[in-house]
Structure formats: C-alpha cells, structure tokens
Image (cartoon, rainbow over all chains, first blue to last red; front, side, top):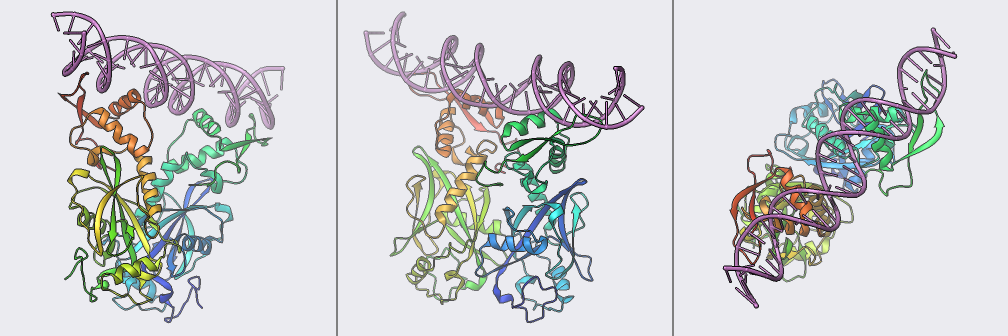
Length: 250
Length: 250
DNA sequence: TTATCATTGTTTCACATCGAAACAATGATA
DNA sequence: TATCATTGTTTCGATGTGAAACAATGATAA
C-alpha cells in the first residue's frame, strides 16, 4: 500500500485509511548556534509553506500518528512529543492552497471532499537535536528545511498561530522540564545552556542567577571534566541527569 | 431540523450534519458548600454514566460547539470554556456502551459506524455557578446531576481520565486566573474563597498566607461592607475586579 | 455593664528565591 | 610575570511565603 511518504501518490491514493476531517500538524523545534529553528515544508510549483503535518490512520493512536509524522520528516524516533492544542475555527479553512497543492501532485479532490472544507488539526510540538535531523520532504512537499524562529515564511492555514501557541507553551514550561535534553548535545557548558534558554525566551538572562537556578533545579549533573578554550577560566561541562523524573518532558 | 437537545430523536437523525469521528466532552465544574462538583449524565435503562458531550457541526467552530453543549446542559451562556486536551488512544474505543445507549433510544448504528469505532474527543472544561445551573438531561441521557469530585460514578470510555486531566490543569492555573469568578457569588468573604481553593486543591491552606497572597494578586476588590455574623469580628466582603485582565480565565 | 470567646485582619520572624553586583579562580596570551 | 576575558562563588537587598504571634471586633454569657 502506498503511504504518505510517497512523494507522488496517484489519484487512487486511499484516503479511506485515515480518519476524515482530522489532521495533525507538528511544530518541530531545533537549535543551533544562531538560534531556535523550526522545520517547514515547501510545495512543488507553489509558494506555499506549511508545518509538517499528516493524517491519522483509523487504527492508530493520535500520539502514534504524531510520532510517525515526526519520524517521516526527521528520521528521528523516541522523541517526546507534546500535544498542545486543537485548532478548529471556521476561518482556518482555506481550500485554495490545498486544492493547488493536490492538483500539482495529480490528485483532484471533489469540491465536497473534507480536505477542502474546514477540518480540525491537532497541534504537537517536539524538541529535536538539530544536528541529527535529516530533513525529508514528503507527502506532496518538495522541500523540508529549517527556518529561524524570526525568519519564518508565510504559512498556510493557521499554521502561524500554531507556531505562536507552541512557543508560548514551550516558554511557559521551559524551567520545569528538561528542555535542553534533545536540543543540545550530551555535554554542554553553562554558557551554552544559557544561550539556548535565551533563544527560547527571546530575552537576555542574568548569568549568575541562571547558573544558580539551573544548579538548584537538580536536573543537571556536573561532569568533573573541563573544556579547553581561550584565555580564561575553563568552564565545567554539564549533562542532564537521566535518573531523575519519570517523564523527560511532561 | 431535530437537534441534539431532542431527547427522542428518530432513526433518521441526521448524523451527516456533524463532523465524523470527532466529539467534544465537557468537564463542568460547580461549587457548593460541600465541595467541588461535576455534572454527569446518566442513560436510560442502563447503568452508564458519562460527561456531557456532543458532536461538532460541519459549519461550527469547535469552541462554539463546546459552548452550545454547555448551554444545552446548564442553560448558561457566556461562560469561559477551556480546551484542555484531545483524547485519541485506541483503547478509548468502547462500542458496547455506545451501542446499548443508542439502541435504547431507537437508533441502531451499523457496525462500521464511526460511533462504534475509536473516535477522537476534545476535552473542554468550564467553571459555572452551581446555583444558577438548571441541569438538563438530553441527547440520549435521562439524568443530569452534580456529583462530588470524590463521589463520581464509574464513567464510560476514558471520561475518568478526562476529569483527572481537567482537574490537573485547573489546579495548575488556580492562582493565575480568576477561578472564583464563576464558582462563587458576586460577593464573598476571604474564608469562603479559601474554602473554594481548598476544595479545588484538595488540601488545607494556611489562612494568613492565603489572605496575603490573594490581596497582593490584585484580582480582588474589598467592598467596605461587612457581613453580619456570629460572636466574632465580622469579615469584609470581596469581589473580583472586573477591570483588570482581558481574559477572565486564560 | 463587663468578661469571654471565636473569627478575622495585620504584623512579625525565619527562610528561600532572585536580580544585581562584587569577588575569586583560572588559563591562555603578551 | 602581568594582563585579561570568562566562569564559578559569594554577598546584599528586595520580595514572597509558611508559621506564629498579635490586634480588632462583635455577639454571648456572667
């Protein structure tokens, strides 16, 4: 059976395998030296951009569907996914982009197909290691790449709102969860961790206060080792404790 | 056209008016002197109990659908509703109760009807004034009444999990939102407010600390008046400021 | 009229957190 | 050996909170 990773599925693509009128869209966060990024898809022969999304199989849990979509786009598995909101305004319906995307891929949905009506989308976000991701376009799109959080292209539907909402929740929970676990490498300096937090919160943090707070949180483990560097005291390396809470991010 | 408030709709009930495979379930919180309560439906000729729920019309925003369901069950409108989670595990499917409920109401869904498969449900919760609610059974159910938060009957599907999750989020946000606005009357004493918080959090709070915290939050307005009472100093009356934040609860 | 008592409002103390800043440590470079 | 940038630690003041003492008040009983 054809699946949604097949970039050019035929008209006979089996839409009946999915729950109708329901979708999942993922805000996939990654982090590199120059800031927080999000994975965005581009579509053939159009100027449309969207979040990576997909549909839910009839015998598939919604969390599993989100995991599948994440793996299809990044090659990563075993990443914690956070379901953050369901979007279902009437205004989110926007048949034109969907119609054009579909037609450019050889599928012409009938006018009453749910794809061209308002449907509900479940928002999930994930934190992944930027360096380990192999971006894979798929499911109609022909590009899949990172965009800085402040340099996003215009997105279809209400995907900009989805990004905004995901960011809001990420910021709300940033100090109570082990946010850096998937966004940084195994070992990092306190300065690197602070830069990550500054990118997420989009504000400067006070160095010594941040240091204390993170150390007191109990989430970090100091690895006696130090890092070779420049003309200054060399920093410690830290990692996240693996033994602490049940859920890494929850 | 028949609508879902019609208690005895015919076989010809028009399921096509709704989005398929998608539902809304509401955790409706009320508060009286003896604690926090939730509205629960009971079904004719069965021992099944459930949260008040319903389906989403094809041209209806999901938030509006939740409002409609709330009004159908309580007669109340203009209440803030909080969408808190989407439930879509495979295990939540439980065709037997649904089948029996439907058959007892003269509707026999075919075995492949989505009502008998796994469908996704969006959880909303609302805080309403217990005294103003006129519980109205409807949409298949023949009873609609309050149950204490610790005396809930066994609920169908994953509705117990929904209650648990709604409570978790209510507790998380209890100090940052004007929780009491809809749960208490216009005026109340600090002691009454504290009892409400103790019911929600299910723990004893320290009187003086609570007093200070609430006064410092800026959400309360002290009404110079006092209350006649017993052999002791009479308390002030308070109300929530109406001019402060944009969203009462958000 | 006065003493008593329960409840409410206010204040105080100890402790923890956090921003801000001072201070100490360190490791390469001049 | 002196200098300098960066990192780790400590200190100080402001604020929030638990705990408890203290003050105010209004009905009841003596």
